[in-house]
Amino acid sequence: MGERTAGIGALDDILSQLRVDVIEAHYTQCSPVWREIDYVPAHNKLYYICEGEGWLRIGDREFRPMPGELVLMPANVLQSFSAIEGRRPYLKYWCHFNADLGDAGLFSWLDVPYRLEVDADRREEVIARFEGLVACASERGIGARLREKANLLELLAPIAERAALSRNGGTAEDAERIMLIMRYVETHLGDELTLDGLADFLHLHPNYLVKYFNQRFGMPPIRYVNRKRMERARLLLRTTDSSIKEIAAAVGYPDTNHFAKAFRRETSASPSAYRAAGGGAGEG
Image 1: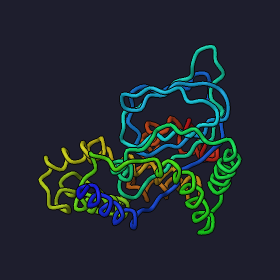
Image 2 (image 1 turned 90 degrees about the vertical axis):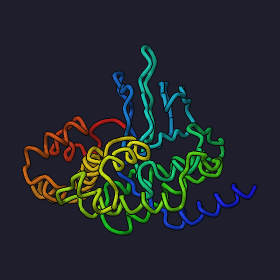
Image 3 (image 1 turned 45 degrees about the horizontal axis):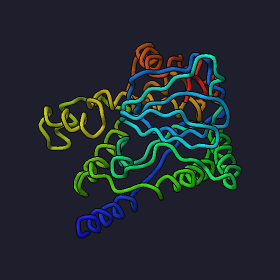
Image 4 (image 1 turned 120 degrees about the vertical axis):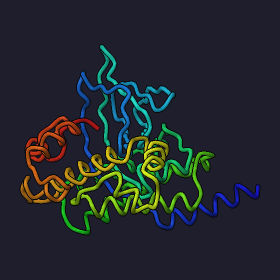
């Protein structure tokens, strides 16, 4: 009892500093070739299934979510998804987002249900929240950012209410380190970020830092940095009129061609095609 009380107290301290950021949100029909096997996303994903059928695997658990269900796919967890041959693929709302304790952050502290059936009398509210996310995604300004955060938090609340404190969660000191890493990377995306530089900043041996990142973020440090750069680039392409060259420089790529190749590897679209599609290139 004492350990759990202490754990909840530490979690309260962490949640008081929680910040969520929406990367993108859309309402789309998955294509018949919708498929990705054994990959580890750097961001969290939230689906609301409207119609159709599909298959998901999160960690070692497999699901076939039904219409009327929310699905949470946490960052830095091995995942797969696929359409089912001969069946209509999902029509769904989807959102990619970050939690500011690290991409493994909030959901490394909570054991959350990956799949949640929404009560019939709440489904219109859930749809309205997702519609709000989709509308805000194409708007600029502080008002739109505040509204999208509010909508996302309302969507996450019923999932969090059914969560338990994770046995794999770290200490309060660990949470502080994760937040320190997040802040440092986010404020230096336009600079040269190296393994030795990160290790020096955190006062850790480079070998330990690699091990720590693999444990807490599911990937090596430099891959994590590159993922964060591409997430920032996607946001800038979607919400600003900055040129491709300016955005490339803002996320640490002085060479525009190098940036375009890296962006395509991450999103399967060129920066210009992604912008032209309104940020909807690729699948949720």
